Structures are given as C-alpha cells and as structure tokens.
Image 1 (cartoon, rainbow, N blue to C red):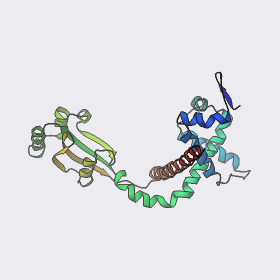
Image 2 (image 1 turned 90 degrees about the vertical axis):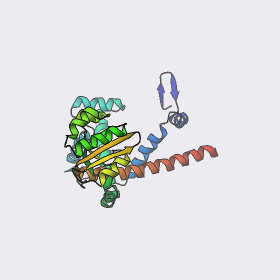
Image 3 (image 1 turned 180 degrees about the vertical axis):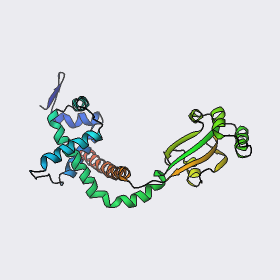
Image 4 (image 1 turned 45 degrees about the vertical axis):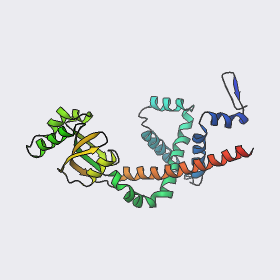
Amino acid sequence: MLLHVGHQPITADDLIGTLRRHGLLPAVIKELVIDQAIATIPDDTSSVTAGEALDQAIVTFRQTHQLANESQVKAFLQQRGLTTADLGPLAQRHHKLQQFKQATWDKQVESYFLQRKQQLDRVLYSLIRTREAGLAQELYFRIQDDGQPLADLAREFSAGQEAQTGGLIGPVELAVPHPALAKVLAVSQPGQLWPPTPMGEWFVIVRLEKFLPARLDHPTRQRLLDELFNTWLSEQVQKHLATETAEQVDH
C-alpha cells in the first residue's frame, strides 16, 4: 500500500492509471527525465566548500522562486507536501539542473540567439487604431501634415487600451505585436509614421519611437538556455509517453 486518500487506498498497481486519468503522468515523467539527466552531474565532495555550496544553492533557489522570507519558504514547501529538511536537496537538484543546462547547451546559445534575435529585439511605438478607414486617413493627415500630436489624437480616437497611454506601447519584444504590425516595426526608422494599414478588423496608424536591439546579456543567455532545455525536455517526455502508451496497448 502506497497511501490513503480519505478512505481510498492507492496501491502501486493503481498509481499509473490514476496519474494517467488525471493527466499527471507527463509531469511525473518530466521530473524523472530530469533526475536521470542530472545524475551525471557530480556532487561537491570537498569538505571545505560543501557547506558553502549548499548555502549558496539554497540562496539561489530562494531567489529563483521569490522566497524572500521564512514564511514564504514554509508555504512553498507545504504546498508541495515537503518539509524544511527537503529544502537542501531541492536546492541542490536545482543547482545541478542549471549545471546540466550549461554543460549541454551553452555552446549553442550564441547561434540560437542569432536565430531568435529578431523576435527578442524590443520596440517602443505609438499606435492609433480604428475600424473606420476614413477616420484613420483623416487622423494620419492631421499628424503628418498638420503636426497635431499623435498622443492627443490617440487619447481621443484610438479604440484600444493604448488610448489610455496616448497611443504609447512598450517597450515590447517584436514577437508580441500582431505579425503584420511586427513586420512594419521591424523595417521602421525611429520617428517614422506609417499611413493607415489594414490589420484584421482595424485600420492602424503606427510610429516607431525607439528600437532596442536584443543583447546576449546574462538574463537573455539564461532565458535561451531554458528554452533549449525545455524543447529537449518536451521531446523526451513525448517519447516516454509514446513508449508507455504502446506498452499499454500491447498488454
């Protein structure tokens, strides 16, 4: 017998079926794949630095999960059915996982960054959108020819939430706006005003205010490492699920 939930006993034979019925099997497989992956990462066996390494791992783990005080740590552990004694092993596992990511994908990050850079570049832009083609054309000429502030016209006429900020949006990554709008922004120069462009149900007037190119700094490097790892992890989970499903069919 593994455990009781209320009056219901859960046996080892029941467990896989229970996990599958409730859609929890992929999460369990994911954690097992991680355990197998980090098993190759050696423990810090130095008696002088082992304690310091554990302390630093706990500090990093708490920072990652935004656990600023002991009450937040306690709540975090309780939600997962863990105790204070589990914090150290949990932090060490997290540390080993970061080491595994570095060892496996660090050399690929720069080329991956170049592939992703256009989506990671950020833009600050001003936008007016309306469903009326005639109004959009009039507003464009009032900005372009008459010099009226786009911000004032956006507050009065724009039909989206950007009206509250005088049409100003961002900075946001180029992957965030509508794909058609992102294409316009990607080829814009700061200060360039575009005439009304149909995008879905809207007519959009847009002006690029500032272009902020992505840099491969530490946060971006960590983000890309996580993306590469998560892609690999999803593939591994799907492979194991497919194998497990095939075995169930065979039986």
